[in-house]
Length: 107
Length: 122
Image 1 (cartoon, rainbow over the protein chains, first blue to last red):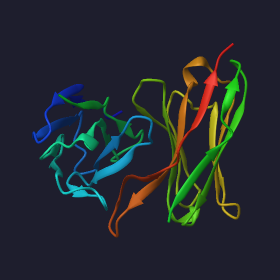
Image 2: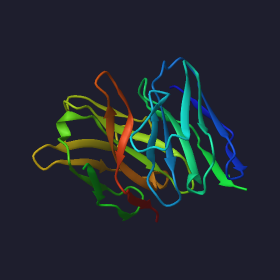
Image 3: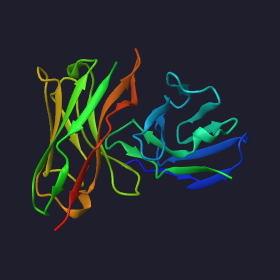
Image 4: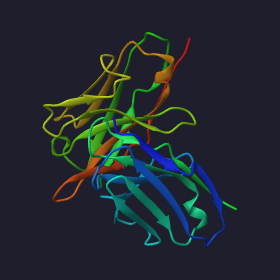
Protein backbone atom coordinates (compact mmCIF):
# COMPACT_ATOMS: atom_id res chain seq x y z
CA UNK A 1 0.00 0.00 0.00
CA UNK A 2 1.11 3.57 -0.65
CA UNK A 3 1.52 5.49 2.62
CA UNK A 4 0.76 9.21 2.66
CA UNK A 5 2.45 11.26 5.38
CA UNK A 6 1.39 14.83 6.08
CA UNK A 7 3.18 17.45 8.11
CA UNK A 8 2.59 19.23 10.30
CA UNK A 9 -0.38 17.55 11.97
CA UNK A 10 -1.59 20.96 13.13
CA UNK A 11 -0.62 24.58 12.84
CA UNK A 12 -1.75 27.95 14.09
CA UNK A 13 -1.09 31.11 12.09
CA UNK A 14 -2.32 34.67 11.87
CA UNK A 15 -4.76 36.04 9.31
CA UNK A 16 -2.78 37.07 6.24
CA UNK A 17 0.07 34.64 6.84
CA UNK A 18 1.35 32.24 4.23
CA UNK A 19 0.82 28.63 5.24
CA UNK A 20 2.33 25.51 3.65
CA UNK A 21 1.35 21.89 4.27
CA UNK A 22 3.49 19.00 3.05
CA UNK A 23 2.48 15.53 1.91
CA UNK A 24 4.92 12.74 1.16
CA UNK A 25 4.07 9.49 -0.64
CA UNK A 26 5.93 6.27 0.15
CA UNK A 27 6.46 5.68 -3.58
CA UNK A 28 6.24 7.58 -6.85
CA UNK A 29 2.64 8.58 -7.60
CA UNK A 30 3.39 10.95 -10.49
CA UNK A 31 0.84 13.76 -10.14
CA UNK A 32 -2.08 11.62 -8.93
CA UNK A 33 -2.47 13.69 -5.79
CA UNK A 34 -5.52 15.58 -4.55
CA UNK A 35 -6.04 17.93 -1.62
CA UNK A 36 -9.28 18.27 0.33
CA UNK A 37 -10.53 20.81 2.82
CA UNK A 38 -12.86 19.68 5.61
CA UNK A 39 -14.40 22.43 7.70
CA UNK A 40 -15.78 21.45 11.12
CA UNK A 41 -19.06 19.55 10.82
CA UNK A 42 -18.93 19.39 7.03
CA UNK A 43 -18.03 16.84 4.37
CA UNK A 44 -14.64 17.25 2.68
CA UNK A 45 -14.38 19.36 -0.49
CA UNK A 46 -11.95 18.90 -3.37
CA UNK A 47 -9.47 21.78 -3.46
CA UNK A 48 -6.69 20.69 -5.79
CA UNK A 49 -6.39 17.81 -8.26
CA UNK A 50 -3.49 16.51 -10.34
CA UNK A 51 -1.16 17.96 -7.68
CA UNK A 52 -1.39 21.56 -8.89
CA UNK A 53 -4.77 22.25 -10.54
CA UNK A 54 -7.36 24.25 -8.62
CA UNK A 55 -10.85 22.78 -8.60
CA UNK A 56 -13.66 25.09 -9.67
CA UNK A 57 -14.61 27.91 -7.30
CA UNK A 58 -11.53 27.42 -5.12
CA UNK A 59 -10.02 30.80 -4.20
CA UNK A 60 -6.77 31.67 -5.95
CA UNK A 61 -4.93 32.06 -2.63
CA UNK A 62 -4.68 28.25 -2.63
CA UNK A 63 -1.96 26.63 -4.72
CA UNK A 64 -0.54 23.14 -5.03
CA UNK A 65 2.77 21.78 -6.21
CA UNK A 66 5.05 18.80 -6.44
CA UNK A 67 5.27 15.50 -8.27
CA UNK A 68 6.61 12.03 -7.65
CA UNK A 69 6.70 11.69 -3.88
CA UNK A 70 6.70 15.21 -2.43
CA UNK A 71 3.77 17.60 -2.59
CA UNK A 72 2.62 20.83 -1.01
CA UNK A 73 -0.46 22.96 -0.65
CA UNK A 74 -0.01 26.63 0.16
CA UNK A 75 -2.50 29.21 1.39
CA UNK A 76 -1.02 32.56 0.39
CA UNK A 77 -2.98 34.76 2.74
CA UNK A 78 -4.74 32.81 5.47
CA UNK A 79 -8.38 33.81 6.00
CA UNK A 80 -10.76 32.95 8.87
CA UNK A 81 -12.83 30.74 6.55
CA UNK A 82 -9.74 28.58 5.90
CA UNK A 83 -9.97 27.10 9.40
CA UNK A 84 -10.29 23.41 8.56
CA UNK A 85 -8.48 20.11 8.36
CA UNK A 86 -6.66 19.48 5.10
CA UNK A 87 -6.06 16.02 3.66
CA UNK A 88 -3.96 14.78 0.78
CA UNK A 89 -4.94 11.65 -1.12
CA UNK A 90 -3.23 9.53 -3.76
CA UNK A 91 -5.29 8.31 -6.69
CA UNK A 92 -2.45 6.36 -8.33
CA UNK A 93 -3.18 2.83 -7.14
CA UNK A 94 -5.66 0.91 -5.00
CA UNK A 95 -6.02 0.97 -2.10
CA UNK A 96 -6.54 4.71 -2.39
CA UNK A 97 -4.97 6.30 0.66
CA UNK A 98 -5.26 9.59 2.52
CA UNK A 99 -2.78 11.48 4.62
CA UNK A 100 -3.48 11.82 8.33
CA UNK A 101 -4.67 15.41 8.01
CA UNK A 102 -3.41 18.85 9.00
CA UNK A 103 -5.58 20.98 11.26
CA UNK A 104 -5.25 24.69 10.48
CA UNK A 105 -6.27 27.23 13.11
CA UNK A 106 -6.10 31.00 13.43
CA UNK A 107 -3.78 32.40 16.06
CA UNK B 1 -26.11 20.05 -10.23
CA UNK B 2 -24.63 16.87 -8.79
CA UNK B 3 -26.21 15.71 -5.54
CA UNK B 4 -25.47 12.68 -3.41
CA UNK B 5 -27.79 11.82 -0.52
CA UNK B 6 -26.97 8.95 1.83
CA UNK B 7 -29.50 7.08 3.96
CA UNK B 8 -29.73 3.89 5.99
CA UNK B 9 -27.30 4.67 8.77
CA UNK B 10 -28.05 3.82 12.37
CA UNK B 11 -27.18 1.92 15.49
CA UNK B 12 -26.41 -1.80 15.24
CA UNK B 13 -24.95 -4.45 17.54
CA UNK B 14 -21.65 -6.16 16.78
CA UNK B 15 -22.18 -8.92 14.23
CA UNK B 16 -25.21 -7.15 12.80
CA UNK B 17 -25.95 -5.89 9.30
CA UNK B 18 -26.93 -2.61 7.71
CA UNK B 19 -27.39 -1.36 4.16
CA UNK B 20 -26.44 2.16 3.19
CA UNK B 21 -27.97 3.79 0.13
CA UNK B 22 -26.78 6.80 -1.82
CA UNK B 23 -29.24 8.50 -4.15
CA UNK B 24 -27.41 10.25 -6.99
CA UNK B 25 -28.74 13.04 -9.20
CA UNK B 26 -27.30 15.40 -11.78
CA UNK B 27 -25.24 12.72 -13.52
CA UNK B 28 -25.43 9.09 -14.64
CA UNK B 29 -23.95 6.49 -12.29
CA UNK B 30 -22.54 4.49 -15.19
CA UNK B 31 -20.33 7.40 -16.25
CA UNK B 32 -18.11 7.53 -13.17
CA UNK B 33 -16.53 5.22 -10.62
CA UNK B 34 -18.23 5.60 -7.26
CA UNK B 35 -16.67 5.14 -3.85
CA UNK B 36 -17.50 4.92 -0.16
CA UNK B 37 -15.16 6.76 2.21
CA UNK B 38 -15.53 6.63 6.00
CA UNK B 39 -14.38 8.74 8.90
CA UNK B 40 -14.28 7.39 12.44
CA UNK B 41 -15.02 9.88 15.24
CA UNK B 42 -12.23 12.47 15.51
CA UNK B 43 -10.19 10.51 12.98
CA UNK B 44 -9.04 10.91 9.39
CA UNK B 45 -10.51 9.72 6.12
CA UNK B 46 -10.40 6.07 5.09
CA UNK B 47 -11.19 4.68 1.65
CA UNK B 48 -13.62 1.75 1.95
CA UNK B 49 -14.72 0.51 -1.48
CA UNK B 50 -15.00 1.51 -5.13
CA UNK B 51 -17.14 0.29 -8.02
CA UNK B 52 -15.84 1.02 -11.51
CA UNK B 53 -17.80 3.09 -14.02
CA UNK B 54 -18.67 -0.06 -15.98
CA UNK B 55 -19.76 -1.82 -12.81
CA UNK B 56 -17.57 -4.76 -13.76
CA UNK B 57 -14.95 -4.25 -11.10
CA UNK B 58 -15.07 -3.63 -7.36
CA UNK B 59 -12.25 -2.88 -4.96
CA UNK B 60 -12.16 -3.06 -1.17
CA UNK B 61 -9.96 -2.02 1.70
CA UNK B 62 -8.46 -5.06 3.44
CA UNK B 63 -10.23 -4.04 6.65
CA UNK B 64 -13.68 -4.59 5.10
CA UNK B 65 -13.05 -7.26 2.47
CA UNK B 66 -15.54 -10.11 2.75
CA UNK B 67 -17.87 -8.15 5.04
CA UNK B 68 -18.88 -5.04 3.05
CA UNK B 69 -20.19 -5.12 -0.52
CA UNK B 70 -20.52 -2.17 -2.88
CA UNK B 71 -23.12 -2.28 -5.64
CA UNK B 72 -25.33 -0.01 -7.69
CA UNK B 73 -28.72 0.14 -9.43
CA UNK B 74 -28.42 2.29 -12.56
CA UNK B 75 -32.18 2.74 -13.24
CA UNK B 76 -32.69 3.80 -9.62
CA UNK B 77 -29.53 5.94 -9.74
CA UNK B 78 -28.55 4.52 -6.37
CA UNK B 79 -25.27 3.29 -4.91
CA UNK B 80 -25.31 0.78 -2.04
CA UNK B 81 -23.02 -0.47 0.67
CA UNK B 82 -24.18 -3.75 2.22
CA UNK B 83 -22.51 -4.13 5.59
CA UNK B 84 -22.41 -7.48 7.42
CA UNK B 85 -20.54 -8.90 10.41
CA UNK B 86 -20.15 -5.36 11.70
CA UNK B 87 -17.51 -4.56 14.31
CA UNK B 88 -17.04 -1.68 16.73
CA UNK B 89 -14.20 -0.39 14.54
CA UNK B 90 -16.68 0.09 11.67
CA UNK B 91 -18.27 2.93 13.63
CA UNK B 92 -17.90 5.98 11.42
CA UNK B 93 -19.53 8.52 9.16
CA UNK B 94 -19.84 6.95 5.72
CA UNK B 95 -19.60 9.24 2.70
CA UNK B 96 -20.73 8.42 -0.83
CA UNK B 97 -18.35 10.12 -3.28
CA UNK B 98 -18.11 10.59 -7.02
CA UNK B 99 -14.90 10.31 -9.00
CA UNK B 100 -13.54 13.49 -10.60
CA UNK B 101 -12.36 13.14 -14.18
CA UNK B 102 -10.83 15.53 -16.68
CA UNK B 103 -10.73 14.77 -20.40
CA UNK B 104 -7.47 12.89 -19.94
CA UNK B 105 -7.58 11.19 -16.53
CA UNK B 106 -9.35 10.80 -13.22
CA UNK B 107 -8.24 12.28 -9.91
CA UNK B 108 -9.86 12.24 -6.52
CA UNK B 109 -13.46 12.90 -5.61
CA UNK B 110 -15.32 16.07 -6.53
CA UNK B 111 -18.73 15.40 -5.00
CA UNK B 112 -19.47 14.17 -1.49
CA UNK B 113 -22.73 13.36 0.21
CA UNK B 114 -23.55 14.71 3.67
CA UNK B 115 -22.71 11.33 5.21
CA UNK B 116 -24.53 8.52 7.01
CA UNK B 117 -23.58 7.73 10.60
CA UNK B 118 -23.08 4.06 11.48
CA UNK B 119 -22.59 3.14 15.14
CA UNK B 120 -21.70 -0.42 16.11
CA UNK B 121 -22.02 -1.05 19.81
CA UNK B 122 -23.49 -3.50 22.30
